[in-house]
Image (cartoon, rainbow, N blue to C red; front, side, top):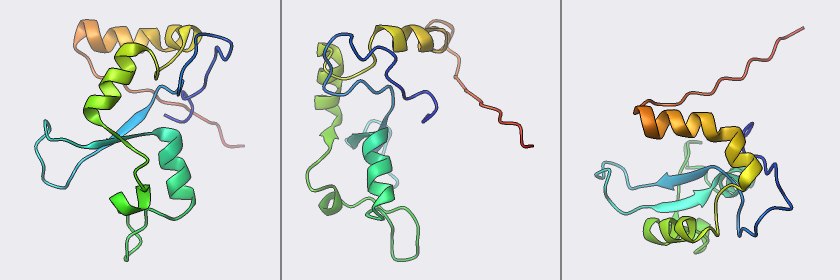
Length: 119
C-alpha cells in the first residue's frame, strides 16, 4: 500500500487527505458490519513509528486512549469520501483506475505486487 499511496496531482482539487488507503479497525470477534474506527495509512505509520500501538507482549494493540480522539467513525469517513474531502485526486485515481475497475466491475480482488531485485 505504501508504494501506491502517493499524491500524483498535488495541484489538483482540495482534499483534507489525498491518500488512497485507510484502515478500518474493529473489535476482535465483531461482525463485519459492526462499527469501527478509520485512520489513514499515514496515521497508522505514525502511530507504529512512535511505538504507541505496541501491546505488552510486543504485538499490535489499538487503544482509543492512544489515538486521543484522532480517528473517524465509519459513517463520518463515508461522508467525507462522498463529499470529496478525502480520497485520491485525478492523476492518482487514473493511475489506480485499472485496479479499481477490476474490483468494481468484474467482482475480482486486487493484488498489487512489487518486485525488487537483490544484487
